[in-house]
Image 1 (spheres, rainbow, N blue to C red):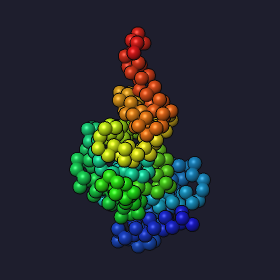
Image 2 (cartoon, one colour):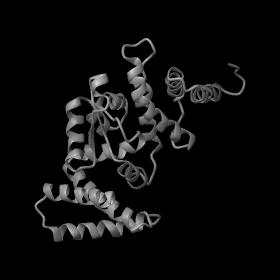
Image 3 (cartoon, helix red, strand yellow):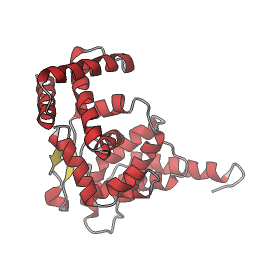
Image 4 (cartoon, one colour):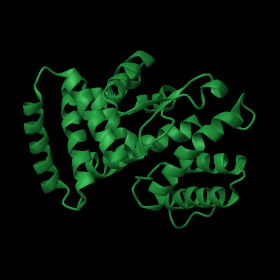
Length: 249
């Protein structure tokens, strides 16, 4: 089935990057399997363990080759699985993390990091928006995204979730901007991801009222009025809490 095809494809890509034989790869794979059994006992299906063990072995090699690529893959969990591109991530350049600053300081660094992930078969080029916006992006398979979410980010980082929210909100264009409708539609899937994380209490929203307001603008412009109202209400509530109980808005 598809699971086995993905597993074999990833394993094959791994072996193309190293000089070791298949027996040595199996040794690393078994070690990864045992580690996964300890750290993620909730994975009961053999297919999930086989796939995740293969990816973990590959991830360890990616981390050795380019740490930024490995960190980018972890960061991907906080975005939608489709349509990640440089201009979206560049808004994270103001964060204190040096690896994010280096990754997003120019498109060359970003491309180097993401192409390594592509060479291992974990990331695909997504050209669905290229004809409309002039720039393509990258996507990962849904099961890879699940792995990044539940295994690579087993210890959920609300600060990284805030970074992702900052990126999405900062990329939202105003209605009168050029090609705003196309870009807004492109960002809807990321906005939906942020909304789910917010509702699940997985984002540190302190000082992020502006971002909630921008999500509200996006939803309103795209005709999703219920979602827009929910974001506006959260933004307003955040302002009230920041100002204190004795201040009326």
